[in-house]
Amino acid sequence: MHPVLFQIGQWAVYSYGVMLGLAFVACWLLARWYLPTRGVDAEVALDLVLAAAAGGIVGARVLYVATNWEVFAANPLWMFQLQRGGMVFYGGLVGGALAVSAYVLIRKLPVPVIADGAAMAVPLGSGIGRIGCFLNGCCAGRPTGAFFGVTFPGGAGPVVPTQLLDSAANLLIFATLLHLAVRSRPRPGLLWWLFLALYGVSRFLVEMLRTNPPVALGLTQAQLISIPTVIAGVVGLVWMLRRRAVPSEGGGDE
Image 1: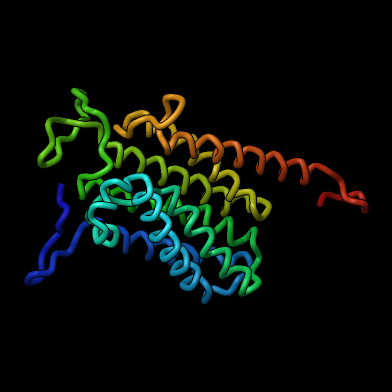
Image 2 (image 1 turned 180 degrees about the vertical axis):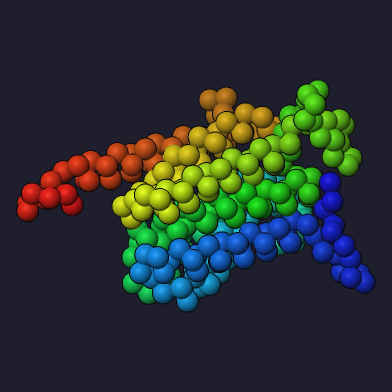
């Protein structure tokens, strides 16, 4: 819709980059608020977000390049130009998780607390970032004649604005986890497993409206990754709830 927000001389300011920057700022502010409520110094919030940003961008881009290797093999320099194609969320999730995990281990921070913070930050950042996808005109859905169809510049006709659907789903997940964090103060780690389950389901459903080709069993790459993501989330939730229900040696809850 508006891939370039404005230009300063010969330099173009891209809407996707601006929204990506806003997403990381929002995640940093969230981390600065949340971490002190769980006994972690707010000053590590910036380091965590920078680690997540670096690892997330690299991981997301690497997976995108890998799944479109024929194009990038013929144009190697395009790998470093984000306007040439895009990024894959699950690659970013893995890359960001690895980078944050390394930082957490080095600083000896409480893993469950950081995981819960990430569980809220990831859908918040993704919800904002998907608006950048909409403005950029990428990641659109299937053709549709419905009233909510959007025609992008250069497009053949109206399509499902799956970017906005994905954004709304992510922001709903964020709101749900934030509500639980504030109202219920669940056991550390539970929000992370709940996030995996909720995001896996939402991405699987949104993917049904996109145009990505199936790669196996009639499912797209994102759907195939979503299935083990949901399973991991459900198994993690069951494990935590069972641990909570098992009495300790002293007769109380763990």
